[in-house]
Image 1 (tube, rainbow, N blue to C red):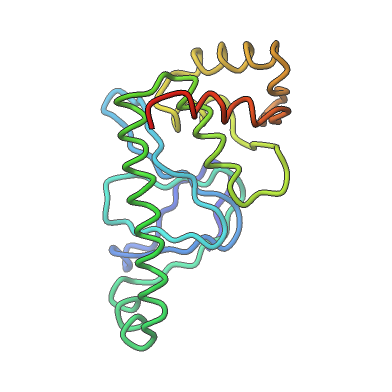
Image 2: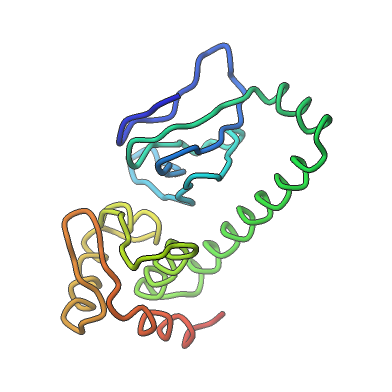
Length: 186
């Protein structure tokens, strides 16, 4: 199934309980408060999986292709292929670890450190230093406001740590950001 940039992932009503796999593109998983504030818990890329069991909303960040399967069909697939179940357990462990990291970040870390950690998580497995997330998405992922993120990014740009572009940020000196992370509570 295809989704356009900023389109919510909504599946046919006949599939009320689904698990989906990102084939291409990126999907933001976020909670939204009654007053419209958003807190993103994850950005999923190709090869990652998510279930609609939580109250979080899934939104395509860019043109995205997903494969969805009803939970009943998925359970049957896991019975037939135990390796699939083992792979899913690893993915769920990764999601749990990310969720726990977010809780610790919000409880104990300054906004600049949380933003640096968002960059580090986003950089994992990448070959370049470009982060293709808007300032608003970075704010949502770091539990902050766009204004605060803009201030931090401009400060880092003045220090030569990042280069700001429309819709993305290039990390010029990522090791300086990782130093910020290592000096805080871990």
